[in-house]
Amino acid sequence: MRFLEKDELLKMFLDNIFTEINPASFHAWFNDLKIITITDTKITFEVPMEIHKKMLGDNYYNLIEQTLFNITNINYDISFVLEEEIKTLPEEIPQNDTNQKKFESNLNPDLNFENFVVGDTNRLAKVAAMAVAEAPGRIHNPLFIYGKSGLGKTHLMHAIGNFITENSNRKVLYCTCDEFMTEYTNIANPDNKNTIEYATEFKNKYRNVDVLIIDDIQYLVGAEKTQQEFFNTFNYLHQSNKQIIISSDRSPDDLKILEERLRSRFMWGLPVDIYPPDFDLRCRIIRKKIENTSIANLIKEESIEYIANACQNDIRFLEGAINRLMAYTAMIVPKTIDLEFTCEALKDFVNKNIYSNNNITKIQNAVASHYNITIDDLKGKKRSNKVAHPRQLAMYLCRIETDETFPRIGLEFGGRDHSTVIFACDKIEKELQNNAELERTIKEIKSKL
Image (cartoon, rainbow, N blue to C red; front, side, top):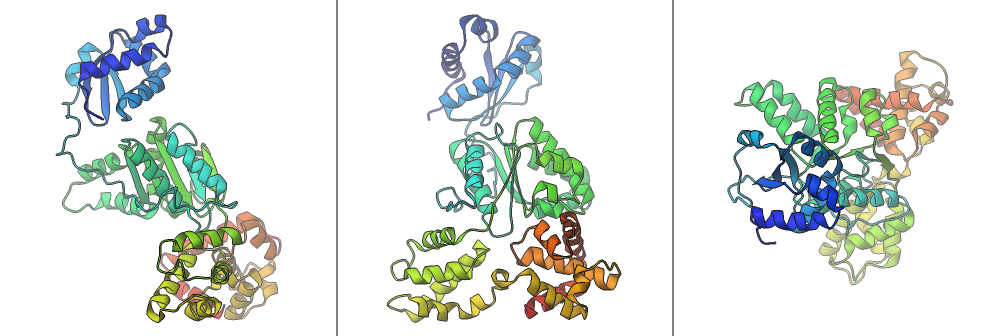
């Protein structure tokens, strides 16, 4: 769209507004508007009285925003000033200034709604994501997507971000919780910058955006100061009607170690979960992944079904199996990829997939054997450290190595409450951050599985 001068834009704007509201309201609140400044992201109107600022901001903001977007295809941040306030405005930056620093959204352009395969286990999450993408800041704010690793949460968040950036000029920022924590920690010891300057840059980065996407929020557990900063950032953005999108491996209710005020805010919008894909969805994902590849016309349906059965819980593992099959095909160059060839190509890879084959009983056996205790000990009431720590470790492994819920795991450990399982998982996760011996123990138990 061609660049519009202030006067031309104002005329088109007022003509459109006049058709949307009654004449009395138009003459009362819009007739004396003037456009003072326009930048790539902001537009400032001069109004005659303080009451105009309140009425236009409180009652007509959405109409003004939508009207400007219809004319310019730009989502402006809109402000209103009195004549005496004009001298305090920042210097106008011309639209489309080529010298402006390019904003980095950190989005992966390959992850979009078109290549997100939908099934019964992720349909609600997809619908919610599309609603947010089409009206950021106006519906489901925050959007909280949760589910186990490898089910498509990150794909959906990137898809939302890419849709928004392609259809508006809104600033979208994607980052992992770990990146947020690392940058905040660096405030105390920044490189070549004083602390105040670095802290200001940090706040500007995360607050001067229209959409903030944070992946794996569960890693805020135990980071009290970072939780406080995220709490402040969340409040700032939410009060400014900016969209917040969060992902986690568990629901807000299950993030017990996070501060209550954070968990309650996660529930303000829409929490939506993604379940492991069923067999039909896994088959469709495989077909989507291999279309337009070298194996698309070679692979038989029996091979697709074999891969779908071997990779039941994690889409990332399914992608790994496809990549392994493609590499093996490029090396052997078969005429067709039948079941026998697929089994040969994936024999070592699939055998390592303990994730899809483990169950609670197997894990209990492996942990009990490693610590030389009995399964009855794990299920019983003993609270000595000799039993309590292996029990917590077994609960943790059941959570990460199976698709069982917290309540089901608690039931298999002597009918314990799901909050006990959550506490155990969080405790082991926290210990793993600084306990190399525990990490070796877990690897050893996994190898026995």
